Image (cartoon, rainbow, N blue to C red; front, side):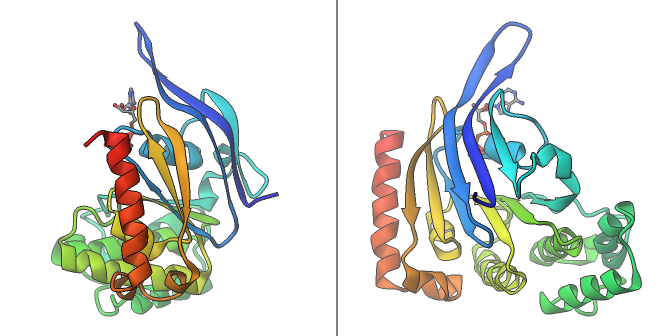
Length: 256
Ligand SMILES: Nc1ncnc2c1ncn2[C@@H]1O[C@H](COP(=O)(O)OP(=O)(O)OP(=O)(O)O)[C@@H](O)[C@H]1O
């Protein structure tokens, strides 16, 4: 059995008058330690899939199992990171990154040392006593990542975490996040609009189509791209080949 199984899920949003079907018969599996990206046109249901994986809402039909359990029963084992960092402005970076541990009653001298070591590994040593407003956008996103990883989630769900950053910061952060997740051997699912980001960070890419949202095609990233830093991946010949393949597929879906 796979680490994560999405089994024939359908999803509709309901209001008082009607139902809108957003996902139709989506199934896929993810193995432990895999990095998966979800790409697709706007409105194809990427964020909806991630919210269902996070256990924030059940699918209308079908089921999701993570490590043998429904996500709703293990919310504290699932890390969720969004475009906005959601750090509390009135708390220091140290207080922010320890908050999750505190709320889950898992703050011990040992987990505190681990969280502060992670902050150092991600290049943020020295900012512990600063407030979020004193940090750049890229630094805040790094702090948000540390806060998410600090409680050692089984899986990390990333919803366009780099899209609000300038291009250079984004490239640097892709490298850092890639290295950090590889070191801690974390399973991750990334939602992105950026084909380059998906190829350079992932083991596999799930391409979704819209109206209704469905899984259109799965691309396997060639092995020679999987174990080098995302920035380096972008200059490899097989990167361009896969980029063009995905681009053409997206064009056909969006009718551009
Ligand atoms: N809470 C909601 N109630 C009703 N409709 C919703 C709700 N959330 C999303 N939708 C609709 O569901 C569809 C899929 O939305 P979703 O945000 O999952 O797509 P997405 O692929 O992540 O989009 P984008 O790339 O633009 O962020 C869209 O048509 C959206 O308008």
